Image (cartoon, rainbow, N blue to C red; front, side, top):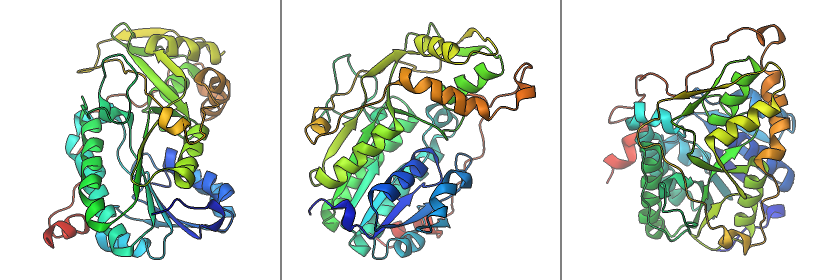
Length: 356
């Protein structure tokens, strides 16, 4: 199957379109696909927010449906006459995955399986699957290419690796073109405060010390949301059929350095660092080899350091001025175990499994 011309795309479906990454994808595609109308499917779990789509709705080209990507009948209806599907739905927080791994398996793996089956039914020309570099695990220090084995070391990475295996096992059967993006940590506005950077920024804005696991030497790579959206468009227009692409900028920082940069970016009030016990298996991450994506003409333009002043202002503005100088409760990075939301056999999620 051929790549798509952005100017000729008429209908796009974005799953998870009310979340952090999904809503930015919607905004970006509205600009670069002038003829397209976008259908958003979102389950509206805790990380979604309708306000993320305020500007998109004002264009009159976006509609939204609340629902689970695991509902085969609903997803099949949503994909009618679609030219492109961008699959950004799912659970994405590493720490939360240790508390409720079953929720990640259901949302990320089985939800993807249902979406692929619906895509096969509707004969959608192209799907972009938003994966993650977490499928590689820590790595051995050298840059990791797309052909490296998948060796996830946490339940989130495992669920996303399972999703990719399901894609690989199904796309040939349905004769589909599903291209996979494996980004490192994406940074930008609208991200839930459970994630490292927004959490640090909001805690610093109210004067709370920033919790750093262990000695803070664990390395993390970053890519800006603008660069990620540009990578997605590049793969839509110039990517190879059923190919996989790493997405990463040149940023590679240890957690302690990130905390220091945040404290420099947030001027008032002053906060410090609190060293805490590390999470299980908390390790650094090897850099990614992005030569395949760069061969298509993509280059990362942003860096974490350049983005931080803007991000500090955005996240700081969400904190009422009167609250800045008093201790304030910020959601924990490792939340207590919550009840997993699953669907019983016979529901939309498992309906496709029962038919085979």
